[in-house]
Amino acid sequence: MPAEVGALWRPDGAPVLTGIGRRRLQPPYRKMWKLQRRLPAHLSPRGAEVTERVIGFSIVYTDSVGKKKREIMKRKDYESLAAFRYALRKFFRFSEEAAAARGLTIRQYQALLTIQGFPGKEEITIRDIAEWLQIRHHSAVGLVNRLVHQGFAMRKKGKRDRRKVCVRVTAKGRAILQKLAYINKQELRQLHLQSYLADLIS
Image (cartoon, rainbow, N blue to C red; front, side, top):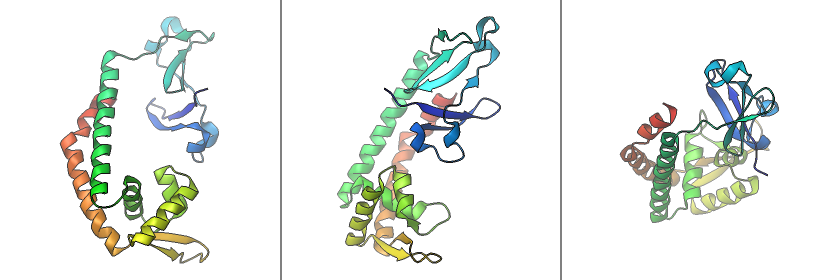
């Protein structure tokens, strides 16, 4: 049984949040993950009320009597999605190889990037790392252990709550992160991902 995907829309109909399954959605959205919306009049033939649900990555349109409508996807939509996914895969492969060339796994690079680039914080908790990398807590603990062992990160007790352990990047970690982040940024520019995104949202 495919997982349901919840979505929230602004009053103008534009999506503002999507997620896979209940666990991925954070409050206050968690209780609203099965929202539906009424479609514009031009998508509702003969004045029937048509709602949209996202199930298993497929958009299903249903009228007021429960009769399924045809999915609205054009050839161009598939081509844009496929091209965007291909560009992403090329970037991920480049990032993996660049990290490996410097003795890091891609997950270790992503963890360093998360710690250093977390909004408004210079040190974060393991729970933050697990959430941003979408991994389990015990996996994040092992990841941090390896980074600390290699000297790329360090643990530190929280300033307000001494029971809470925070993680920050060391000088050694920042040095290797700066190199990797720079070449990843350059690769992103060469891939022109913004053009793929423009095609998807147009």
